[in-house]
Image 1 (spheres, helix red, strand yellow):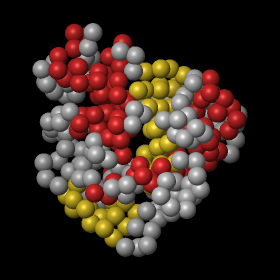
Image 2 (tube, helix red, strand yellow):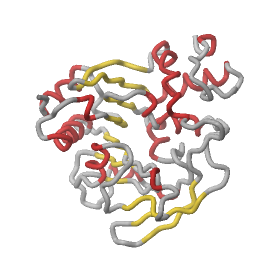
Image 3 (cartoon, helix red, strand yellow):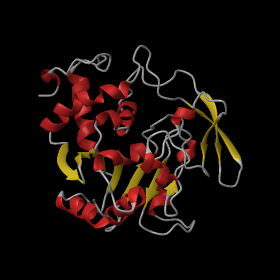
Image 4 (tube, rainbow, N blue to C red):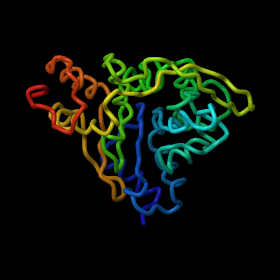
Length: 273
């Protein structure tokens, strides 16, 4: 059985940064049994990644609520997310500063007990309620790039790497967002409701763009954007946000901007070698 201490040791062994923005996607099943379960695993991540002034980001997405019976896509009092166990724990954790994005919220941790006072985590999520796309370069996902952050994939691949959606938004890749915005609602802890328009992820003719993102992995590796490690039983990729964005821009330039995510075919090496 893994412990909080052994998880921290695994992170130390792979020299994961403690002073940067680190966005984490996790499969707890891949990690294996942890003493104290998901709560202890999250405590290990918070302790490690905020030790030297870093920020830990855990996605707490609720995009599956789009088109549901209610037009409230984010309820800040709920621990229900659509992407797994750890996000649900992070959504209502007492140290979490959760952003007000209606479909792609995230909990941000700066290692300090939440007091409502301004601080690094609150600064990071500021203005998120005003973004009008799913993973806006002007929001929390875009700030991973702006601040030279990392993406840590624990037991999952780039098909779960939501940051890559933000890179495509930054590059203005066509056929990635709904043409027209939809009005959706956020219920605050106070019970008040905010209504916001948003253009959500949608690609005509492609069922799931993110399912094809692993096609970029050979290019990421060739250009040194990925480092490998192990946490618990899980294989891990520690990815550099800016390097991945640079590789995707290179691929787009060399491919002439053609649609590369429409099929399962590997990327042509001439696009990135």
